[in-house]
Image (cartoon, rainbow, N blue to C red):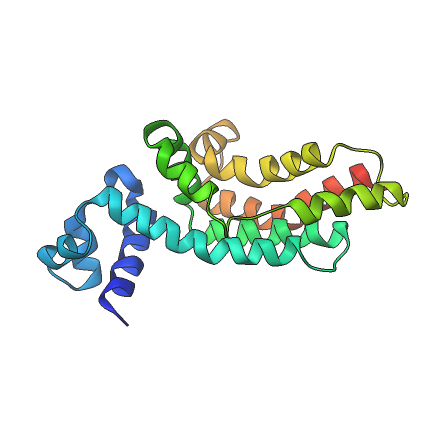
Length: 197
């Protein structure tokens, strides 16, 4: 394992436990088994490290999502695969949605840089397919972009507002995780049932 891989793995663990604000570079260095000077040599500060860790994680997720969007599967199967894939990814990287929201306010240039990345998830093929399945009478007439917004909202929101969700419905961390596991299929079922002709 390279030093960079050790740092990324350690940073994920510490960010997951402490969040971005609570994480300390010394803790990350200790977790990686390197000294703090080496960590600072590789990454000058916590913000740059987090951005690198984020882009590394995003680089793993985006190809999975694009593979789903561009596959030969039906729209219904793509919805099922997307919700399962995205929720599985965020369960493994639970700090990422909150980081994106924080960065949208504090560092919009960084957010735009990954949203404009040529490897970002691109739903163009899926939108065309939704339009075709509407024309073929498989799906009810819906605005494809509203449908995608519904899917994204239902999958992203509980993670982005995790503390609020846990407080409002009075659930523990383990109950939250169980609900998220259930949402892998329940979101897809709800959406498919709402658009199926």
